[in-house]
Amino acid sequence: MDDGLYVLDNPLQHDPARLWKTWFAPGSFIEYYPVEETVRWLQWQLWGSEPLGYHLTNVGLHIVNALLVWWLLAKLRLRLAWLGGLVFAIHPVQVESVAWIAELKNMLSLTPLLLAMSAWIDYEERRDARDYWLALAFFLAAMLCKISAAPFPALILLYAWWKRGNIGWRDVKTALPFLLISIVLVLLTVKAGAWFREIHHTTPEPILLGDFWSRLACAGAALVFYFLQFFWPMHLLPFYPQWNFAIPSFRDFLPWLALLAGIAWCWSRRKTWGRHALLGLGFFVLFLSPFLGFIGISYMNFTRVMDHFLYLPIIGLIGVTVAALEATGPRLSPAFRAVGAGTVSVVIGALALQSHSYAAAFVSREANNLYVIARDPTVWIAHNNLGVIYLQSGRPIEAAGQFEEAVRLDPGYAAAHNNLGNALIATGHLPEAIAHYREAVRLSPAYTEAHNGLGNALLQAGQLQDALAQCQEAIQINPDYVLAYCTQGLVLAKMGRLPDAIAQFETALKMSPGNPKIEQALEWLKSQQASVQK
Image (cartoon, rainbow, N blue to C red; front, side):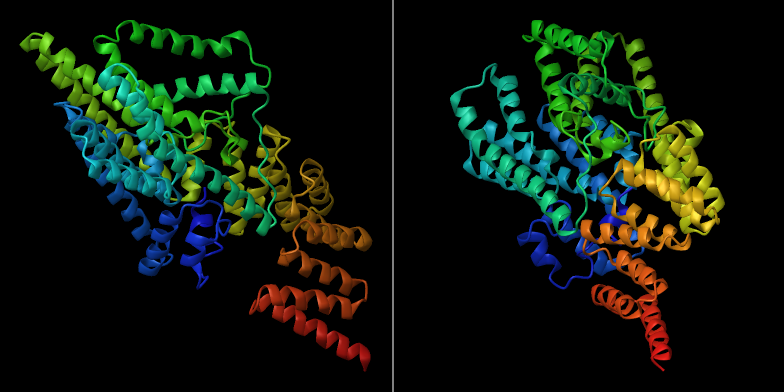
């Protein structure tokens, strides 16, 4: 996934002004999460590229969050709050968040958010201004780690309704500063992503969500999916097959009918248990809302749902379940209570074993993608990822096979065509490579790497003018793409234009100082020019 982007390939990784840019130069990284980036900087100082320290950080934060979930549920007067914290700690859907180094932001943001929730409960109980300002400060810290905390102002109003049965003007006024922070940081983060793409000349991620009705159908299916993942987490995958709601049918909206029926039922019982159920389910829906498909996010290019988005919303379902167990227990006979306790123990053990087993799928990139393919061979992104791994490890024939399968499953996936072109070049299948590069460029005209790959392939085929045109197109799209200058330099050298070729490599060396391959090529070109002049 994004572990490389966030750690090894982070454009700020070796920048001496990294901390300044992290806080005061939005657009320096793909998101504006300065607290998270500061922690990453500290991690790099401590253990560099060794992954163990990063994993221990994630595990430690997860344990802290589990204890805070226990504390939060205890503040809501749940005697079985400890059980809620335990379920949060060992539930299999949490494995993805803890295992992926890039998801530090998930756990890091939840810690202050849980503290903000606890401080808000204290404020509601005591009306002490100190609790209010603590809640606001913790919420700000959470938002500076990840904007998934943004629905918290709505949760404040939901809590007010749960506690008093109505939402007054005073509740709205106290929620307004939280709402302001939420809006400002959400907009700033979105804008920072746009600035980052502009600075680094990367193309915006395509939004593949269709019209409003397609998005609505997708959102309903996602809600049901995440709900079932909590109660039956037995078929987990790092990547799930991509749903297609391009032309939704009536049955695609049935999840919404079920949701509305459930809300109506709980509302009809709002004087008793329904009020508590609406608080927990409302929490679940509110914090899932950014990931339901109404807005386009990069991961939706290959899947509509991912388990790590349940890391925070799962607390609502845990709270409802714990409250239901607590309310049911006293009504049972001693014998049935013993059976119930035994059943809960078995379920806890099964969850722990499932988590332990699933964690093995995250031991390496190769294991991760092989795990997906073994359980669902139709997940094309896993074939593409596995092909990249094989190609990087010098196994181009196996890589080509994986890329071919990815292209077969999704012919419109430009990256797989480009990657297949790279593998075919490595195996000596030049005409086929050119065909796939051309298809990648057709599918994504602003795909810089595909233009450069096509230029390199055309160079090898002796089609020099066409090769030069592709290199020029790549540079026009992304003037900072060093490899395109090198490829263009090779094309010009093949044309006999050695001074122009040398100029291209000198430009590339300025952009990538100290690069040994560029220095070697430049030295060779200069020696060729010297021999020609003699």
